Length: 193
Ligand code: GLN
Image 1 (tube, rainbow, N blue to C red):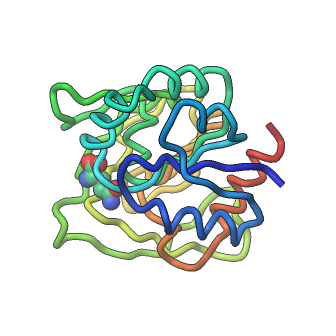
Image 2 (spheres, rainbow, N blue to C red):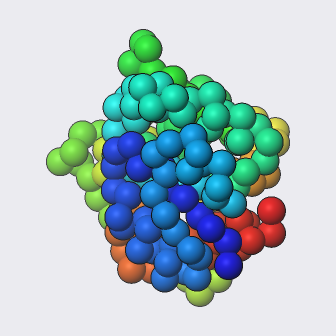
C-alpha cells in the first residue's frame, strides 16, 4: 500500500485524505519537509493557489516540493493544485510561485467566478466505466500543453485534465463526488513509482 500525502497548507485536505483511503492508499497530511520526505506520492488539493504558494514559502516547502517533483515523485493536483503543478500561470498574482511539473500554461479562474461554478460529465482517457462528474469551482483551464504532456480530458473547447510522466492534474474536484476512480488511478501511479 503506498503512503500518499496531501499537501495540508490550505484547501480541501480532508476530502482528499478520505478519497485516497477509499481508493486503497495509506493517506496523511503533509505540512513539513520531514513529512514530505516520507510519502510515496502527494496530492495538492483545491483551495486558493495564491495562498498555497505563500504558505509553501513560509513553511519552507517550496524548494523541497520542487525537488521531489523533479526527482519523479507522483503528484496529483486538483484545481488550485493544477495551478501549482503548471510550469506557467496566466492571471496569477505577481508574486505567485508555481512548483511546476507539467509543461502547460494554466489560466486561473478561467471558468469564471464562484457563482459560475458548475458540474459536468467528463470523459477521462484511461478511466473506464463512463464519465466522471466534474465539479468545477472557480476552476482553471489549460490554455496550452507542451509536447511531453498528454491531454486526458476536455470540456467544451478546453483541456481540463493532463498528465506528464508522474504528474497528473485536473481542473475539477473528484474528491467531492464519492467516485474514487481518479484517486484510484493516482494511487496506482504512486504504487508503481
Ligand atoms: N481559483 C482558485 C485558485 O486560483 C482555485 C479554485 C479551487 O481550487 N476550487 O487557486
